[in-house]
Length: 395
Image (cartoon, one colour):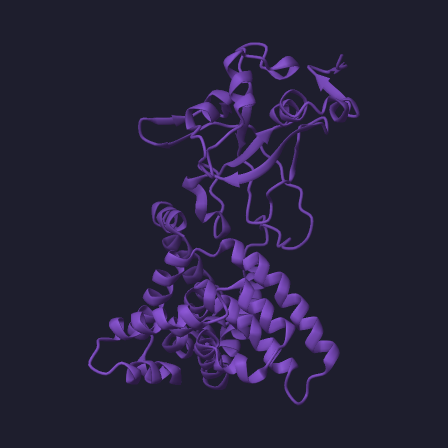
């Protein structure tokens, strides 16, 4: 979000969008189908803005604290255990919760989560309008008279973390073995989540849903109108959740004055970042040894003697594209797309052909890792390797 915001400002995306909207309003003024799009949207936003902070804290706040994120999943179990539930639904929900809890506990860090949870509750209390607060907030503050909200939420968090089952695999497993509606409803973490969710669903969810429906409908109509207004313009296809084929070129770029980025990186860069034991920058000793000895086999660059690890192209990329094949003009696999560059994080909103780049892992590096590092040469031998137009056979 930081990068996206910076690039939206730098590329003047808001100014561009506003100018386009102004032009559209003038064009649509006498067209019944389109003239009410922006008045309708403006009213929808006016109705939504008063609850927008609450909606954000539902997603990024309550759900952002792992203990509450886990507790939220138990709402489905409470429903399955109710009068309208059945044994099959109950067991299916429990089985799903077991898997979720195991994945959740792998991420759980007690000191960090304690601090995050206490801070989030305080921020929710301060930022969200008081008349939109869940009932549990009043109960928490009343429990610790004479304290500030920050102190009260900190005290509640400490007590909650000591007694909730939502931060203990052992406690959750014991509950799964003998689930009790009374025990679930008494859990302090679950009580917070249930109060927040009940408050939202009873008073604000319909309002948020109406806003989203209006934005979706009017947004689609706006795109239709833009295409009618600019009939000669080529519009970006909406291919979300479908296969998409794009084209581009291998290209370096200059992100700012005096700075230039090459279109390739090499294994030397991996060694430069290498930090033993680090989650992001650790690397096998064998890999460092291969680089030190320039032992790249057939995968090294013949001109430079280096092993190319990644290259950049001016293709577009968005979330979900990672792992997409990159092929050359002959249909040969040359890499796999996996990231976008910092200077074009606004790409989900507008494509900028000056700075937009896709970062791709070079297929030579992939083959090198399989062959030279992992020793799985037999896998590479199953492939058809081509170098400079000629077939390559591994010995």
